[in-house]
Length: 341
Ligand code: UFG
Image (tube, protein in one colour):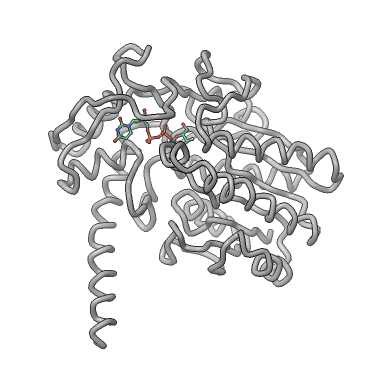
């Protein structure tokens, strides 16, 4: 199949592009490289452009004529969304409208959409099922919820349009061969920050809040390996291709770990006893997010193969060390270029 992948040079997108390539799909990555990287695209072609640029988008659709779209491109940092809601709605919601308009104009009727557990807010139940009310507590979650509503309305209006929305829980880990992984300019995610602290890139790791209504007072999250998450996208594509109806699925393992448990696992896996400080709560954090995953297992036949926190951390650790040498090589190349070498 010809698959148009927005944000395919980013962390999650690049792992899905790799999985699509392994299955023999033809891929076009559409990414403005704001947070993505050219080297992360292991398969297919890359068009460097912004989803806000409707002409470039139209041209890419006209040339590639995709059978399906996977939409990863988005801003994803919860506290940043609290500080900068307008930018989040523009990049996450307005750009999704541009994409939908292009899909409808070019007759591409299948979409796999990257949604998030953040649409649930403080769910009050654990694990959370897809039928739980949507009540996001930060603009990031709201921007994704609005997109889900737009998709639902689009299905009602257009017979030939179908989608799968995947509500990701906490995605972590990296490619088993350490070719790709998280490479944000500023790391915000817990496991990555803990690993950077273990490497000495950060002085200490702050635990944001120890007074949550959880057994050890710190927030609980469902950490899912990015390769298991990528496999689910390939299954969702097959499902839509086989005529499956539009659906929303949670994507997580169905059990969670507290911040303290993650810190201990990172110390255990790396063998490094890095320093940790307990600080106040971070804005916009729900106490507990754990996925009810029966639906995706039943309808898509998804079977997680890497449900092991130590394995998640180990692959991320391997990647962090690789990233360090990659960054050094790249900045060395930059210096050579500037000095005419
Ligand atoms: N945390 C710390 N210290 C840190 C970083 C994080 O204590 O240095 C805590 C956070 O407060 C939170 C937990 O670790 O309680 C996980 O935080 P992350 O930043 O790793 O992830 P989030 O749960 O905030 O968000 C992630 C994605 C979202 C997605 C959400 C769904 O970034 O896109 O998971 O669960 F919506």
